[in-house]
Length: 389
Ligand code: ATP
Ligand code: MG
Image 1 (cartoon, rainbow, N blue to C red):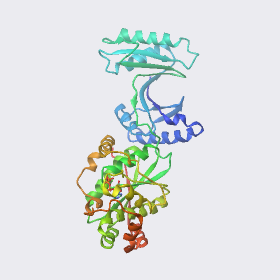
Image 2: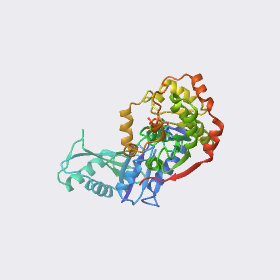
Image 3: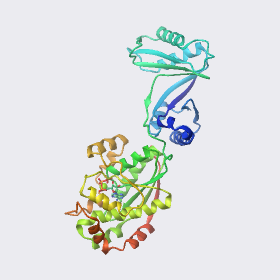
Image 4: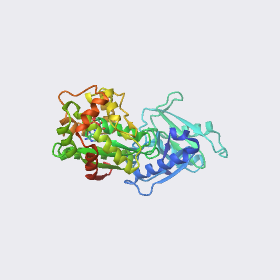
C-alpha cells in the first residue's frame, strides 16, 4: 500500500497539442512547493492527471499544493495491486483515517483496466460490504452520501475519498513574465496574484523614497513579496531609490498634478526595468474611480507614457471585494500596517481629477524626464525573496 496524491488540473487538460508545455510548468511548480518537506517527491503524469508520491506529512503536502496554480483538486489516495482482497483492505484503511462515525457512504468503481475479472458494480459491492462489516456507525446512502469512496482500477488500483479544492488557474511561468508595481497598499499585491493565477511570472518594483517613507515601509513590501512567493516559489523585488525624482517632481510641477507626475515617472522607470528583464507588460493595483488619481482621464494620462500594456486586473472591483481577496491570499494583514508610502504622503490638496493630456504634458515641462529616469535606474537594489513558509 502506498500513499500518494492524485492531482487533477482543469484548463490544462483542454490545451490540446500544447498540453505537455503546461504540464512541464505544473510539475516544476509542484516539486518546488514540496521540496521543503520532501526532496525526493516522485511525480508521474498519466490519464490527464498527476500522481504525486511523497512521505511528507499530509497536512504539509495539502497546504503546499493548495498554493500551486493549475491544480483543481488534490485527492489523498492509496494504491495497491489489482487484487480484490488488497483493494478491500486498502479501502478499509482509508476509511478508518476519515472522520466516519455517524456518516453515510457509497463506493463507486471505475475499471479502465478491463482485464480485471470483476465488473465495477461487483467491486463496489464487495468493498462496501467489507467496510460495513468492519466499521461501526457507518451507513450506506447511494443518493447523497457524506463520503464518496472512489476505486479506480488501472495498471494498479487507486482508492480515494477526498477532493481538496486547489486554486485553479494556470501554472506560474507558462504565460511569460510581467512587472508588478508593488506599493505597500492593499491593491497591488492582489493585482499581482491575479496575473500569477493566469500563469504569469512576476517580478516586482517598489519605488522607495527614504526618508519621506521609512524603511519599515520597504520591509512591508518585502513581507508582501514573501506572501506572493508562496504562490510562485520565488519573487524578485527591485527597490528603486525614488527620493530625488520625488523631490524634483515636488519642486517643479504644479501641486494638483503631483500624483499623476509620480505615476508617470514610475511607469517610465518600471518599463525600462521590465525591458531589461524580458517582462512584456506592467501590472498595477488601480481600480476605476477608487481615488482621484484613478479616474478614467488620469488612467489615460498614465498610459500615455507607456509603450507596454499596463494590466489593471482590479479595474472593475469594489474596495470591499479587493479586501476580501487580499484576506484570502494572506496579504491583507500586512497591507494594513500603518507605514505610509509616498503616494499617501504626497497627496495634493486639490488633485486634478479630470486632467486633459495637454495640461498634463504642460505640467511636466519643468522636469528633465530623461535625466530623472536615468538617475533612478542607477540606484536600484535587487532583493530575491523566498516564500514565507
Ligand atoms: P495600493 O493599495 O496597491 O497601494 P492604492 O489604491 O493605494 O493602491 P495608489 O497609491 O494610487 O493606489 O497607487 C496606484 C498603483 O500604483 C498601485 O496599485 C501600485 O501598482 C502603483 N504604486 C503606487 N505607489 C507605488 C510605489 N511606491 N511603488 C510601486 N508601485 C506603486
Ligand atoms: Mg498605495
